[in-house]
Amino acid sequence: MSEPSEWAPERLKRTDSIECQVIYSAKLIWCWEHSKKMIGKTYFVIARGSGTHVDMYKKEDLKGILACYPVHWFESFEAVAQPKEIESMETAADPVIEEVIFDQPEELQFFEQMKIF
Image 1 (cartoon, rainbow, N blue to C red):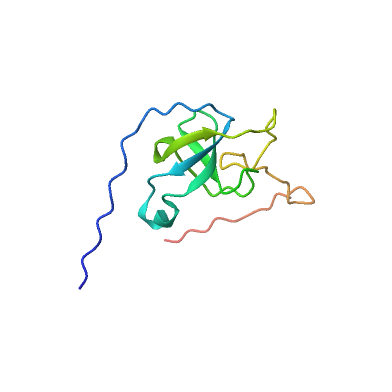
Image 2 (tube, rainbow, N blue to C red):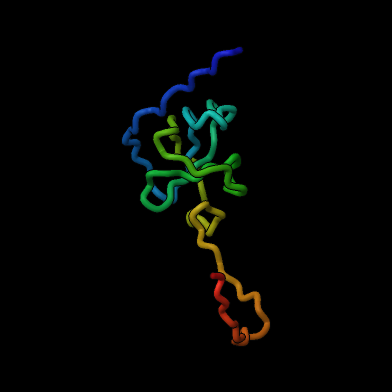
């Protein structure tokens, strides 16, 4: 039987200060073991909301979000030249739009409750 490999514990939270809505290139230095093949690569990230997490993309155009990870899992943040305004992009935190799927209002129906015992 082979012994299970030890996975390094999560890194301590650092206080990296990055601005929200600014695109950075950053190197992923830690993640959960099931995503270990992503470690050591550089990705394009953008902080949204409170700035504790970043949305991670493979390309600078921010299409096709890969994940949303805590900021302290990255290092070597470098701001990327970007357009003056960032368009509304696909994010993990975008609300789901509810659509009406019924053509007609639902009619009330009478149901008789039956006793089991």
